[in-house]
Image 1 (cartoon, rainbow, N blue to C red):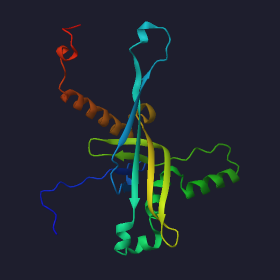
Image 2 (image 1 turned 120 degrees about the vertical axis):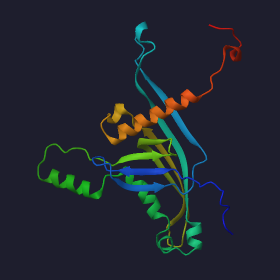
Image 3 (image 1 turned 90 degrees about the horizontal axis):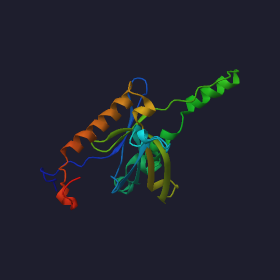
Image 4 (image 1 turned 135 degrees about the horizontal axis):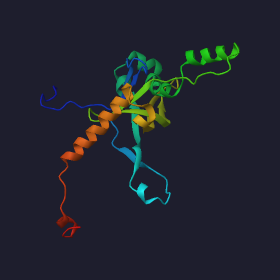
Length: 215
């Protein structure tokens, strides 16, 4: 049966990893199934309570935005089609693509170990790729993964996981975190400007809606 030609193409959410220096794409990870819910929390950045009335309505920077979502990975269809990789490994590759985001590479670990062994006193913390969370063209966000849990729910006869639920927590990186002069800062500013455009398209209310004649 052919798909109705007028059916809209289903977009997938996902994560893209960029080289922090060149912005070259290192990896694209698409979610197998889009999450039904996306929880976002905004914490305004303001000066601490100081009693100074002149500071009461000042913001010190962009709000701190955090995102939580649940994702699922299921190899049932691939196993029914006898996909060679899935039959041998289950969903290990899909899980590993996500898990390695929060690990330094083995090459970085070996390099730092060698530096420590040669007597280097100060070893620079290992740099990770720039992580982008993409949820449609209107939300392309530089993020840092803050928590990550995996519940493996089914296994094949070789104990390879074949179904799992993943919980991701992310913190949006603003220009306060990464500055203006890089790809991440540029993407954050585009995201903020998009919010401002959406806000400008919102149909405002009236005092009558609020049950008052004015202020």
